[in-house]
Length: 77
Image (cartoon, rainbow, N blue to C red; front, side):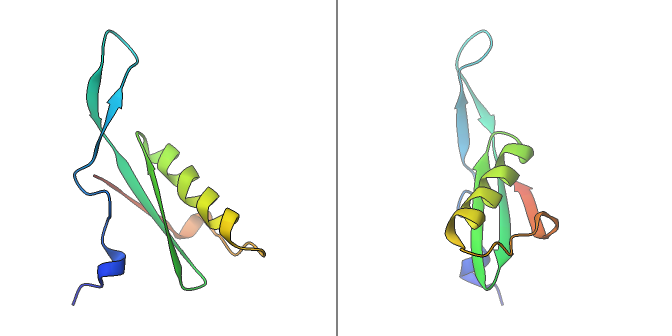
């Protein structure tokens, strides 16, 4: 059985990239971090950007940081 809370909320999402020779749509990444029973989803144009977003959301929400970068899982949207 699939837990709806574990579903990627950004599946199929593209981002507008204005760098280079003109605007274009690029693939994106979503990373998930589970810490203390909470799920934090990060989003970005690169996996690294999405990892940083997930970690930042986790650290911003918890007083004591139990956010471990080793627990981050990522996938391409």
